[in-house]
Image 1 (tube, helix red, strand yellow):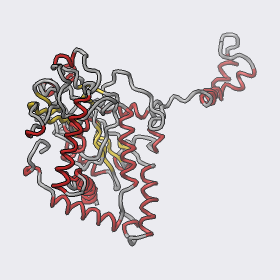
Image 2: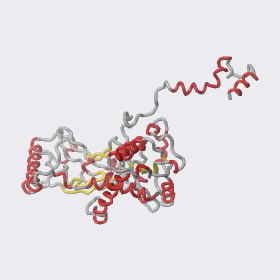
Image 3: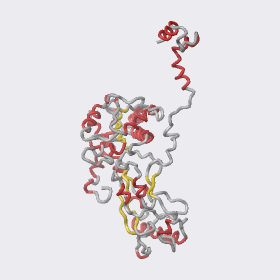
Image 4: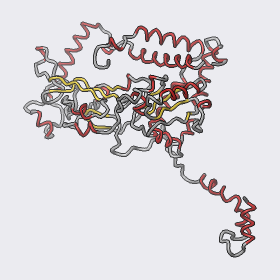
Length: 184
Length: 253
């Protein structure tokens, strides 16, 4: 990503991690990306009543190239899926995704041929937010959860280590098709 | 703009109601700032959400709760009507028969008054649309909704709430099931409000049950904690997040 990726691990990197996390979490710009009714609640979060600017999100960016956070607000149809992916790909790193509402998170009540059953089929999602639609406080809560995640995310060597550990854990985990029981 | 205002007021004297005199003409260009300035002394309309959240409407549809009878037995009878009513197929219920066999003969005990109880109860909050049809369908008022709404999480699996998360906490006078019904009462009496708290017989049963369970776990698992039945589930979930992060890195270098 940048200089922080080249730093040696240890005291210096951990300090940079803390500092970068602190800075990053407080300066996120969301992309304007409303797909359905959840977008109305997302707009409400921008009003003075809830005031998303308190979290360093001064404005919704009208271009993905100036955005760090994609709030997928609403159901993603099969036809919209490539567009979502393209908008996501146009965002510069580091970037995060909140899947707002049950339709974006899992398809919700639209379990049919037209709707993507969860936006995580096409882009990696950091925070899932239930609700139909979630009230503005729920979105603010999801943003605060995301802040915690950003603040504690590792960088550079630590990031690679964490990713390797995650890959090993995923490889050793029971695959879904072999799971027995009700959560399978 | 300032010139426009002054020229209109001076050009048509007497006809313009806005032009009030020298002072108002002088402050006309900055009058708009007065609105902004006076707002500084007004009460802030913003809800300070994480610190001071406003209460929801009393009947706001939030997270579900599985209620209990006053002695601690579960109200859910495992009828699956909620699952049938759910338009999003978010609820999974699996009922099982209550077991009135005594402890000594290997009985599993009774979780609800009546014939059956909800052995498995799961609500997928990534499907649930909080419509409340399950609440309307519930014949025993076992399932109700709370006003709790802070449900965001970073893992799909963790947003499937299981029975232990949904069950109402034990109030005073309640005992953790399984244990038999109050002596001499039947299922109907529970719904007529004849049960107000747990009885001594029920407390004795629960005490004996827990003692037996302790002995068994001590002999089987040793002194370790019995909560280690689900190994590493949390770690795997966290690992998946890092996988997502890594995928993202690779996606747009």
